[in-house]
Image 1 (cartoon, rainbow, N blue to C red):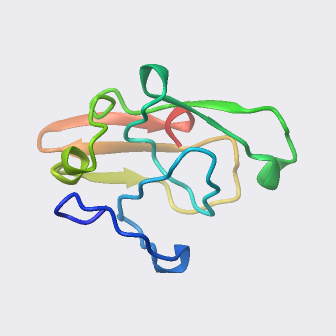
Image 2 (image 1 turned 90 degrees about the vertical axis):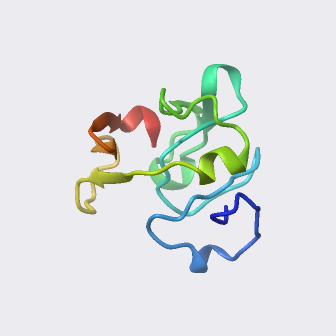
Length: 113
């Protein structure tokens, strides 16, 4: 998602930390992403992680409450703030971070990645 809210297809190797990525239903993505919004019920999505952990059941992830209703790329592009999170590690089942927007903070954990 460009800063203007326009969608632009680029190869995964060109995605950098901090980029906003629009993932279409049933597409694979080779990166850790924080779910800002989803058109699924109540901002949820279902992930297949069999390439990571061999499990074939779908996992539910929830978009962040503060961004859940922003389903238009232009709305997402207008967001201001930053994420703080733990450094890269080999733990697949734990994640700790937060979204900081001015004086306000929102926790980010395994339910959102």
